Length: 508
Image (cartoon, rainbow, N blue to C red; front, side, top):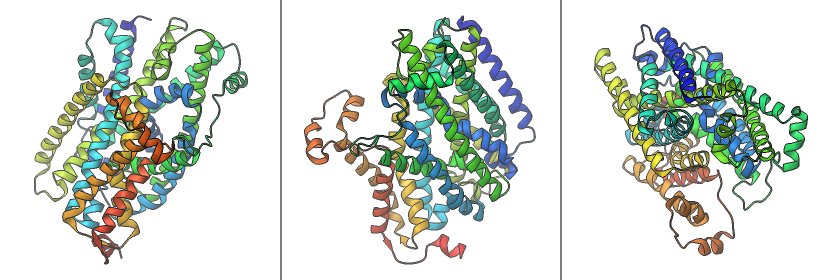
């Protein structure tokens, strides 16, 4: 299919999003932008959050990784499910009891201003890098298969997409995103199912036959029983659990949508419904990956990794409609994670850094500042996408998991210390501990897995033999985030003293 026709469908899809945004942002104010007036339908939130949780990275990278790690990713998904239970029945009750707009307000009430600012800072850092990594992957695909063929430069593609996202999140915020995410999740799931059915038919078999083909290639293997491997099942399940607790339960973007639901019970139903569906959808993505590799092997297609799915879907082998479905599904998978990120970063910066909740500014002045912050984050996103373009990293999902393990650790340590202990912190030392936790984590991971960092830096660090001597081949996997949280927790303990914290006093 010609890139011009594909581009026409992309524009049409954006027009639909803008129509939804216009309808839902009427009479909006700061409260509707930040928390949707606490009147969101839990079923819409649950369905829309599937798209937010998955993103374009899942749509492309999870199937692409099957050729390298089989179905090992599903071990992480099992951990995700356990993590969602903790979020629903431990963290959500706390947020609703305190009637929070920003979840990092908890840290100020428990430990003081420094803890509040530190929590907000690490969220802003983590979400900015993670969201722009996802954005870069999808922009690269659109550039390679559509806009690049039309002579449009990469920077123009990135700029236009960010401008379009700004247009439909500018006024409505969370209230708009809940509806657009529902639309986009529908597009993604329909695209996933249709592409899977078409590929199975192209193999000349049914689902059972395709499964047998995948089994024969070893793709359906889920559990890794090598304790030294980064893919060892206990590491993956434990890591998945804490990734969910931090990247969902301690993440303003994800919680902003949950606490927009009117009651705690409905919010918990939203969380558990979403998590159950998420398990099934991730399994479908893995099956899709297996089918893609079987099809590629049978037809002499050399593509792999993140390039596999778009190469096959946009080839001349299939009808033009499959290319359209893939592009729409890919965009649908991308935007719930990016639009929500920009909105939540705006909310976090306004509330946690600028102190909107304590400010005496009027509604109009707050709105003006909010819009400036919103645009500023879009500019930051553009610069980060261009940085990823310069780095040209082809393994985005592994990078996101690694970076999250490094930057979300302080949030895990702070919230765990606040909830599990009654100790009081020395406020002046909180920033030092929160910075040293990630630093120690990076040093440990570097010593354990120097090959990963050497590959990213393109230089030899001379640590391979030292790593073998110390760790005997042990590789840190997604449990990195737990290690980071423990470093932070231990550091907080060292700068604390017995007593009742501010937040515990207010809740008892």
